[in-house]
Image (cartoon, rainbow, N blue to C red; front, side):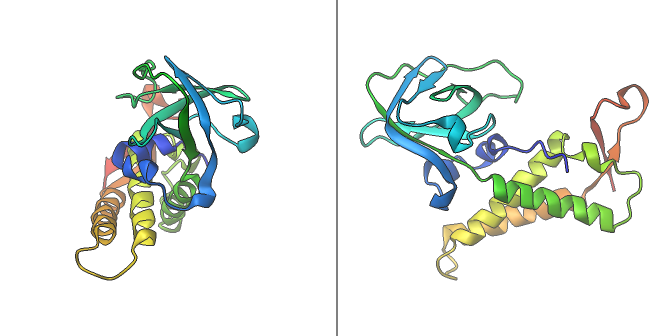
Length: 210
């Protein structure tokens, strides 16, 4: 399965999930010796490569008691250094350097990659069961709208897991219901079909209204 969806797609929808992360086991690394200079983030205590940090994941960093700020991870520059950016309008846009910060920063890299992969798999399996022979499953995951649908489904799953009680005023339950509806609409409203014409063979995917 080719799934291009990353934590960045989920960050666009819900920064809260990274500022206040769920499932601590999915925090890949963290510390209190982070240093940020333009788009370069470093930590001598954290080996980002060994921790499995990848481009497309999200770094949260903060000073003292301030609220964490979420940054896109653009690249793993070395074992102890990342290239980061403020959230960009487009995934292939130029890096947006964060504001200068002096002193050591607390930080963590958290990922919801398991949830994103699970939702992507469910969508593609659903298309396969529907016997949609015109769907190129190998390239489906590259579609921006497919990635958005995956992120919506992952947000629904994560907020559902965060629900503590069945109270009507539970914000997690409300958000889970909201994202579930958006996810269902996204999946039901289009078919993923292989690109044709000049775009054929590029790995792009056209989305047709059902």
